[in-house]
Length: 193
Image 1 (cartoon, rainbow, N blue to C red):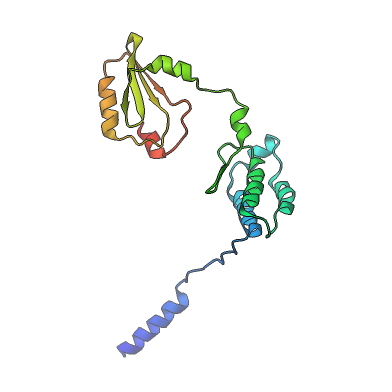
Image 2: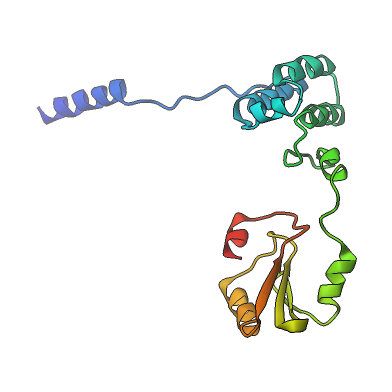
């Protein structure tokens, strides 16, 4: 009897337990890669409404503009160029496409804005007698003001680094934390700072 109960339970489990659903992966062709990237941006890019207000081309029109340029006989470099051109329609400096040979990015986003960082001003603050702790450059300026420059959130900082820097600057009357020109990086390090 136990044997029949086990078989009955196994059959019920097969009938009523959900199975894994496997999506078919499209072939690695230029057309499929174009379609996949366009669809990802169409369904997951959160700024379509905002970009429409800025005068960007509606995403459906982007498809109509760039899809005719894609065919399965094109090289990877040619496809990369088309995909980068398509993504540039978003006018978003945070949307980049990476390949082994290049990074596609919206250059105008960087070129059309005034620089927020001037190396000569930076050198006035730091000079050549500053301290370095895990990517943070720091010193005590005139008037007893602490200055920390952190140029990349990719440079790891630990609690010990921060403890040492803050201990060194503990008697300062004020503190400047300079993250201008920071290239971004890891959210953990940004939050830690």
